[in-house]
Amino acid sequence: MEPVRRKGNVWLASYPKSGNTWMRIALTSLRDGGAGVKLNHLKRGIGAFLAMRYRLDALLDIDSSDLTPEEVLLLRPQVHGLLDMVAEKVSVWKVHDCWGRTQDGEAMFPAEATAAAIYLVRDPRDIAVSYAHYFGIDIDKAIDHMADRSYRVAARTDASHFHLPQIYSSWSEHVLSWVDHSGLAPLVLKYEDMVTDMGFALRQVSDLIGWNTSDTAIEGAVASTRFDRLQEQERAVGFPEVMSRQRPFFRQGKAGAWRDTLSAAQVARIEAVHGAVMERLGYL
Image 1 (cartoon, rainbow, N blue to C red):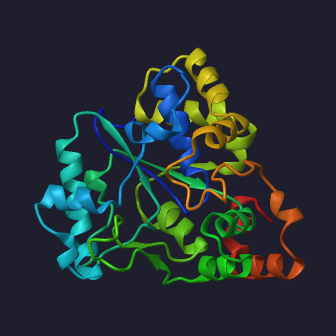
Image 2: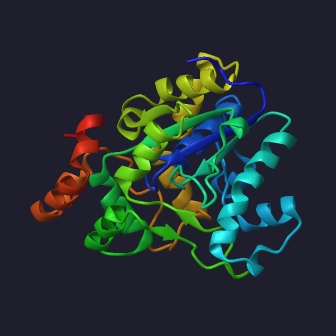
């Protein structure tokens, strides 16, 4: 895959709980030569969350709390284009939206405003467990969300909501939207491969976005962002992105842990809805 142009938007996209934050932290360490990352300072790191209300309001000089959710969605491609125009370097953005088009047919993530796209994917059976833990809901409810093709979050637009409306759709539709329908030819990385060899995953991302990265820096980034180290730091100082201190963000960092948690009926529900995409990705 050819490196991207030297400035502009790089979408680091994933369905929630697929390793996006872990990759952001690892890339932040890599940018700093493999140094440790302070979780409480991650806002200064790589991969800021794209769908923040203040960003749209500042770029368009409006108050988006006066708009309906659909009006906000119509404006988001314009924001992404402005971000690309003002970029002085490659800017990696964390994205949980599925790829799609607005009501007037405009791509939410326009190709002309895209330097590159990276799509992180994870076994939906593991996502169901992690999603339920993070949001404090039962696993059956998480499975319901993952099967809902119309599922969206932050649907309200009043000023009390920091995030903009985002459409997740179902897990399967989310995957297909980025991999098949976006036309952005994303680099697809599996969470399971990150667990097995994060160094190789970082090398692929580094090469894609045009960083001149040494093997020593990659080794340092892998060591600095091991899950046990992130867990230790979260216990010591917390993590601003956690939903509740009673539910740690960095829980296990394992692949296949669903086997110890999901019931046979829950596994069957997930595989019945998502089996075709799971098989394509090697999960069945």
